[in-house]
Length: 140
Image (cartoon, rainbow, N blue to C red; front, side, top):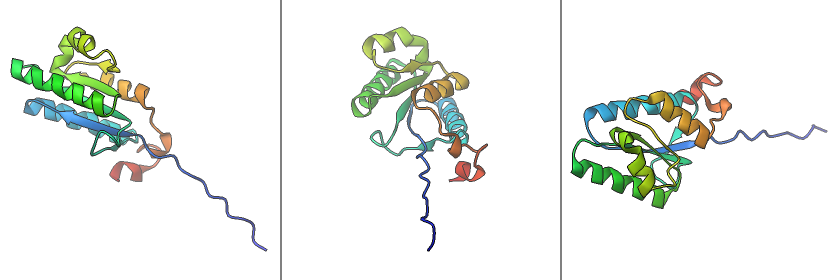
């Protein structure tokens, strides 16, 4: 008689959603952040509902861009509830926190480490999914 097979369930990698607004520099920031998070074992979510945390990379150049950023933050909070704000409007953290006190963190433009740390705090990475633990995780 064979011994029973023991199945090990590998925990799912945490998922991050992202909204990137503004100029090409903001898009580069978003790509840099997502690249780091992927290497840390996070997967990307195509929608708010599937994300463990949502990043909103804001634009604060024009008043209309600020309004669009605030609308995007509000939508992400309404749809998911776990939101981290980064980008140019991070310079107006007090306004963002006044309007959306439930925001988990607010960082400014080019503050990659602060954003990644905020994501790690909000939804810790699973080491089994990081590129250090399993190189295939970064390519999937």
